[in-house]
Image 1 (cartoon, rainbow, N blue to C red):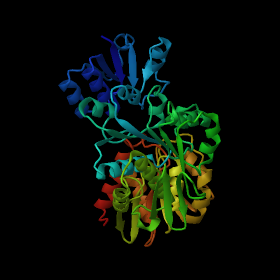
Image 2: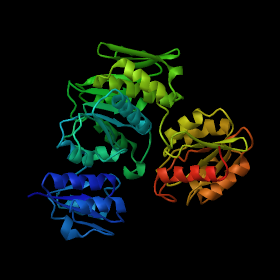
Image 3: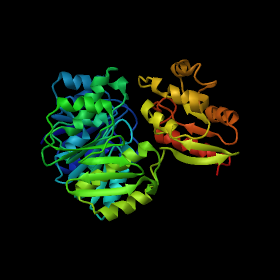
Image 4: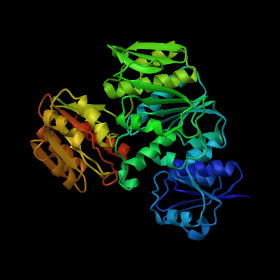
Length: 447
């Protein structure tokens, strides 16, 4: 019996452990921190041995293979020890992919992947497909494979999940964009991060599809480095495409094979150029899966977006509060500020990931009347925007940040939480940050 060790007891980890148990492995799960009660209950139900609060080397270094959760960096001591011992380390995606014959739509990118993944899933689900949502959102891919039987999976994949992918192949691979993000995990080398994102096309054949942003210069610079037998479907708001999607006047068009779809942009509930890109990508992914065009049109008309991404949180004293907590990098904030039409009081900050704030300077000068820095260490953020934004506040908690923002805002303004940073200095995750933001607005009487 092969021994499989799972590192990390979160969504990815517990699902991998359950799949391993279901497939007859001698499985053990180890987490250096605390495992959430809901996951411990599942592990106990499946009679899977586990530990929390540290790693016992003798129970880990005897593994035949290790599934590493995406949140664990390569520099973690136990990972270094496993590498030194030559023990293979894979991701949940690689592991689960071995045990399903379902077809997959796999979506990655620095920004837009959650909206695109959710929309693609909704389109397939509304069309009556036997489909599951997983990867970086929804249920664990491995848990779904262990406990369900689906024809399609729509998976959001982070660069960390792609790093541990070797033999897995996406039937439909989608690459939204590549902009600097998570550079702290990639030795602060952009090319390392780019190489990780390009793994979305790994193992693809002439029967598969690769959907990508034709307007992204980084992706454009990478395409010539790879053999690309798959069907290539770019999406663009700048150039017409014979195969792919493009914008012409107020209508976007998508062509996949001999199927052609068109829809006025004004009919989309989600607004802004970033959401148009997301809609184009999701549309082509659904077309590649064979969704009927009229069914797809109905979902596109009704889809209202995802939580924590430019989500209206309420209005207080004539000031609109917007929760964009999911904006954890510079490029995502760029799209948020680009879409603002009112004076902005901008709340930003958190755990910096090697950010270059230069691309935000023009919007900062034109649209932002005050910057509220919210983090344990705000020095870089304050220094970057000194002179570009008239007023900068330094705060170290959500309450203080929102108190300062409310004082700075006047009727007709927008208070925008769009952090450009990870949340782990003050919050559990970006969802926790967004939920606390919305709760504060509600408590103040926001409507």
